[in-house]
Length: 109
Image 1 (cartoon, rainbow, N blue to C red):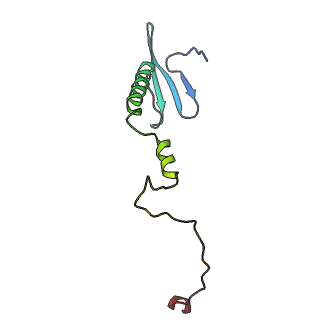
Image 2: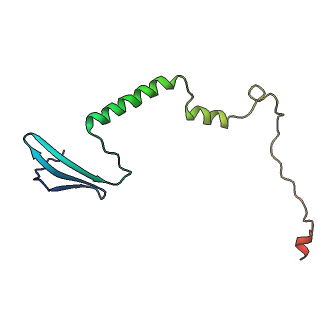
């Protein structure tokens, strides 16, 4: 952990896109300003922890009721059979047939 001593107006840079500015100091409280691009999400730690807790709770409750993307991909890539698609006829291996060129009106122009 990096520990810094800063005065009001001093700035701490994090990477190229985030700056922390010491705005004010009153007793034991420090007021900070955060400058970051709009794509950067910034939360107080207690708010971030609450959001993560709610996300985990939602995932736990929805996990049993929904199929995962992996299940859907495996199902989509599985070979078709009569049980999953009884109305579709079975297809044999793909065959390539050599054809000769037939001249069309466009070819002769």
